[in-house]
Amino acid sequence: MPEGVFVGFAIVIFITMLLGFIRVERGPTAADRMLAAQLFGTTGVALMLLLAEAFQVPALRDVALVLALLAAVTGIAFVKRANQIQGSETPGGTVS
Image (tube, rainbow, N blue to C red; front, side, top):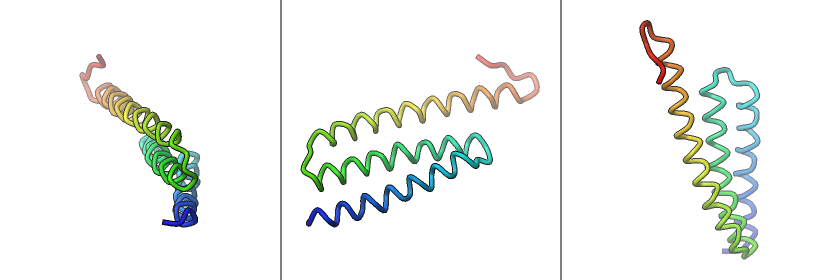
C-alpha cells in the first residue's frame, strides 16, 4: 500500500482523538470522561501502528505496544475505582 493511504487513515484516527478531547472536557459524567480517555489509548495504538507502517519506523511499533499496556492498566484502575465509589454509595456498603 502507498504510504499516503496510511497517512490518510492516521489523519482520520487523529480527528476521532480530537473529538475525544471534547468529550473529556464536557463530560457529563466521570464515566464518559474515562471512556474518552480509554479512546486515547485505543486510537493512539492505531495511530502509532499506521505511522510506523507509513514511514517505516519500527520503533513506533514498540511505542504502540507500550501504549496498549498502559491503556489496559488504566482500564483496570477505572473499574476498581468505579466499584469503590459504587460500594460506598449503597446503604451499608463498605469500601475496601
